[in-house]
Image 1: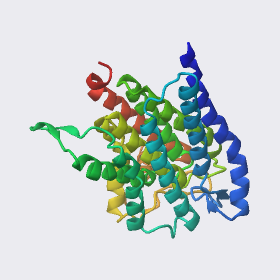
Image 2 (image 1 turned 45 degrees about the vertical axis):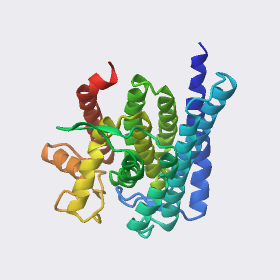
Image 3 (image 1 turned 90 degrees about the vertical axis):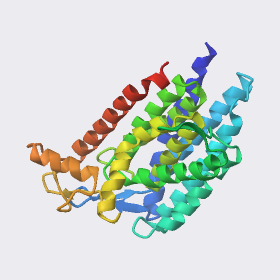
Image 4 (image 1 turned 135 degrees about the horizontal axis):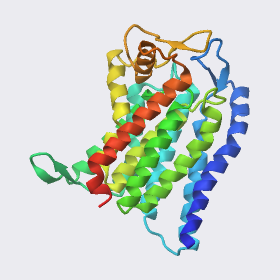
Length: 336
């Protein structure tokens, strides 16, 4: 019966984020930390870097969970892993906020971001997180030993953190993707015996849901890297601590496709559409450089009026489809 109290950290993450966002919007506008809503004709200046409110709500939820475990359940299970996770997320959030402050047109150099995010993996390396034994096709089980913490953990965190923001640029898209992927990974965590990871994931999910109230079209606040980097980092960290890297990578397929499409444009082409006065969107370029562009292209070729909301819903639907396929493929290792 006491397990019901674990809803408190999840609710706390939601309401703390919800409480902080209006103040952040005012402060960000006053400080000039704003960006144009480019998918709309004469788009307004919108407060940026709203992800700091999500990280704050998430942190409060996790700390309440730790408090409940300590004072009510009288246990300290997985506290080392939890505080390593939080250390990495805070480091990633600091890097992201610095990038947001500098502005997306200037920002940190790509190489600088990669190096700094690699440093954010140190808390997980220090506790030798995850399992070094992996299954390799045709070779069976292989124990990578020290290569796993020193090489694969930094690579996983850098990869997920720095690419999650590629599939972005539309109101609500990044936060909604986070809700979908993290909710799916929370299910995986629960059924594979890591319920504590599921609680942490749901704290981020609830914070993202609160953020979506202000971020969905028409947005009143943008997420910035302050949201996308911690969400991407959390996905990688959950996979490492829960030892379900394969299904996490599978769930990441839309982002991987986006990474490949961005490569066609040498990672400089933008994901935005070209807004029309009737609220519809046209392609910004002649070629497809993003799943967002592909969604617009397919809608136009099937007689559907492309709008920002429809593009976002179509990407979310694709992500859900990938997750359902993933559950079907990996069900034997999750639910049995």
